[in-house]
Structure formats: C-alpha cells, structure tokens
Amino acid sequence: MRRFVEEADRGQWTLLPECLDDFIDDSNPVRVIDAFVDALDLAKMSFEGVEPAATGRPSYHPSVLLKLYIYGYLNRVQSSRRLEREAGRNVEVMWLLGRLAPDHKTIADFRKDNGLALRKVCAQFVELCREMGLLATASGSKFKAVNNRDKNFTKAKVQRRRAQLEESVSRYLSQLDTADRQEPTEALATKVTRLKEKLTKLKEEMSKLAVYEKQMLASPDQQISLTDPDSRSMATSGRGSGVVGYNVQVAVDTEHHLIVAHQVTNSGSDRAQLANMAKHAKAVLKAETLDAVADRGYFNSPEILACHEAGITVTLPKPLTSGAKSEGRFGKQDFAFLPEEDAYRCPAGEKLPYRYTNEEDGKMLRRYWTTASQNCALKSQCTTGPERRITRWEHEHLLEAVQRRLDANPEAMHQRRETVEHPFGTMKARMGATHFLTKTLPKVAAEMALSVLAYNLTRVMNIVGIKPLIAAIAT
Image (cartoon, rainbow, N blue to C red; front, top):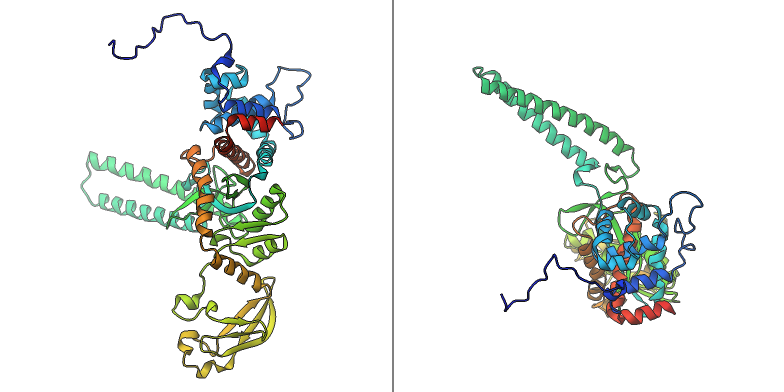
C-alpha cells in the first residue's frame, strides 16, 4: 500500500483553517456571485423583505437567498430541497451565505414571491455587458413544463383517447360474452370479476374525459393542462413529436453568445414574436440600429414592417408555402416585378398589369393579371384557372429587401444556428430532463430568468475572467 496515496484516518482530529475564507481562492466563481449581488439595489428591484419586520422571528435578507439561487443555477442545483442540503454541506455555499442554512420552504417561497425582481436582476447583468456587441439573432425553443403529456387535453387528444377507451370497452365486453358461453370454473369467475373491474374503471375514465372535454371547449384556445394550467402542447422540430411546455424566445449577440433579451410565452408559434424580441434587444443594447437574423418560423409580413419602422434590419428566409410550386407550376418568385411600369413579367415574357387594390386581413393588397394566359404555350406550367393572378402587398419591397440580404449573405443562417442554438443546448443540459420545476407562466418566467443569468455569468467569466469581472462589477 505504500505506493498509493493513503487516506487520512477518519477518527483523527484535524485543525481546519481558522478562517472560512481560506477555502475560497480569489478565482472562485462564488466571489463573482457575492460581488454582483452586493452591488445590487434590492429595494429598488422590488424584492420582498428588504426592510425587516418590526415584530416576529427575524427573516433572511433577500441577498442571502438570491446568492443561493444564483449559485444553484450555476451548478445545476435548482431544487429548493437540494439547495437546503447544499447550504449545510457545501463549503462554497457556507462561505457565500455566511454559514446561514435556510430551510427548503423559505428557499422555494423566495423564488415564488420575487418573480419580477428576479427578472430585473437578469436584466441588470445584461446591462453590465451591453457594450459587447450590436448584432443579434433571434430564436425560440420549447422547454418542458411540470405537466405530463397525458395531463394535457386538446380536441384531437380527447377524440383519440375516447376512441381508445371505446375500443377497450368493446374488447372487454366481447371477452365477457365469451366467458358466458363457457363452463363456470373458479378461474373463469376470477377472470370475469377482473374484467368487470376494468370496465368500471373505463367508465370512470370516460366520465372524467367528458368533464375535461367540457373544460377544454370552454377555454380560449381549446386546450387545457391539469398540472400546470398555463403550459401548452407544442410541436417540436422532430417529426411527429411534441412537448407540453413553454416557448422561450431569446435574442443573442453574435460576438460573445450572450443572451441580450428573453421572454417566456405559451404560444406554440414564433410568427408573432420577431418584432417584440428585436425591439427588446435594441432597447437593452441602447442602439440606434440593429441587425437581426432569425429562422423561417419568424417570417411574418406585419412583423417585418414593424421591425423596419423601429430601425431594425432583419434577415430571414421565407417559408416555401406556394401551392403552385409544390405542384410543379411557376411560383410567384418566377415572376419579375417591373416598378417603372407597375406590372409583373411572367416566364413567357407577358406583362401582368395592375388591376385593383383591396384590403384583406388588415393588409392592402394589389392585384395583377393578364388575359393572355388562355393562348400561352406555358399555361399548363402556370395556372389551372382562366388566368394567373399575382398579389402584391403594399410593403412588398421590404420583403424583397429581406430576400436580397439573405441572397447576399447566405452564411447568415449558419451563423444564426451556431449563435442561438448554443445557449438553448447549454441551458437545457443544466436544467436536466424536466426543464422547469415551477408552475404557471409568471413563476416559470422567474425560473427562466435565473437560468439566463447563470448562463450569461458563465459566459462572461469564461470570456474576461473572474477577477476582471469582479473589478467591472465594483466600478
């Protein structure tokens, strides 16, 4: 055994360092947490309990619990019960909290009661780093809620579940009919009893399903979740897959991959999120202009117009939704617009002049067509109707400019993927299999703010180092 490192005798008395600070070196990340929280004005951020009550048992200062949560999210310890255990055994946490050890209920209540203040803390750290870049990419990702898929009901799910229950009832009734035609035995009697019990349970399930269906049809989006009422069933990128959870939107700067802005929604679509996230990022960065890159899921004409009016230049691909193109005929992109003549030129060389303007879904649309389609040699490749009609939005030039920017910089989408998918992958890995631990949108938003803060802290510590970051916080 002399050739191995030998362990110490567990019964040996040891004199530990007299000062707890000796355990924490100058490059330990907990010193960043300590300096950052101490520099915050918690009263201004609306944290509860900043001013102690005049009577009753003394409470923990909000800074103690905030430090504990930031440490937990930095080290993949999000549960209040696990944080309680860490406070009693982890030397770093002992140093950070001054050997205070709050119970799990106090820890959980702090996160529950200070959602808005926690989001302000996250925004405050972004403000500290805001001069690190002005080009942002936007994306969204689905995060799992504390709600099993079987506890979420939509119209289609109710129909499928009812069909399954009815099929099971029919099968058990058939087995009972078969049992009635057989000679009675003890084993057969046991089987019949078991089948009747199953039928009783199925009838109870059908009664519950009828109640859930009534609640589902009464909800605005015809969907209910039993465990977390704000969570929603959402499709994911995997074919035929989905998740019951929340849609987290982020804007990430391309230089350092820092999350500039984020928002938690329970809308499964990204189509109405582009302008809101881009404006939020622009405000945080305090920039006059902003270049934003997003994927095709964000393509929405009014959103692109709103970005243009806000001084935000967007680059994103247009979804290929043309029915004519999918059937092998010419798409709108095969027709060239002639601005001088206010007309379109078709692949056969014919011009489609402007005819009239009408309003549809709040958008002013200009209509173009020609009567020469009937005798055109390419008519079978163009339209199945009497003539091919082209619709042009009054702000179509903005959409054309977006396409030109994408054509001029085809690598923009690769840059977007490399930039914005990195934070999502990192945060989901830290969160574990069940992403969120809390329920309802406000509490989930507070939890997401802690995850974003932990991610940004890690990035900045890796980029500039521990000591320079502490010095920047102190100034």
